[in-house]
Image 1 (cartoon, rainbow, N blue to C red):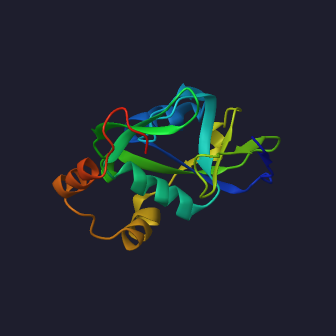
Image 2: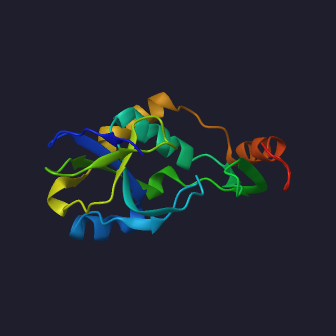
Length: 168
């Protein structure tokens, strides 16, 4: 994974569940493994951030849209596995502005081309600021107005999801 130069003081963005707010505002961001996104990815300990507000808002949009569950085969091929993950609620997601700390190394996130980067280093609470909803939600709603009702989004995903055992 190629490194990405991020000068100290650069504003980055991090999306997280509202239920993690107390911990993030208490100790900052610690690299964690696994994956808690509708991308259904597993990865080693790291912190995912975005170098662009628009990219972070696109990620929020992805999180708030019903998604087909996907996986990768042993040969690395992308495959739908025929299940639907329900969308998250916009009200349950927080957006943080991160001031890039001096000495942090960031790497390109090859699965999120819209400014996605990651680091394996913790980010101190002094570099983390919870963005007020009125700072970003009006922009989000202008970019992604009037989402279709949940039942229509799920019906669309069911119609366009490959059956188990078939490649996408």
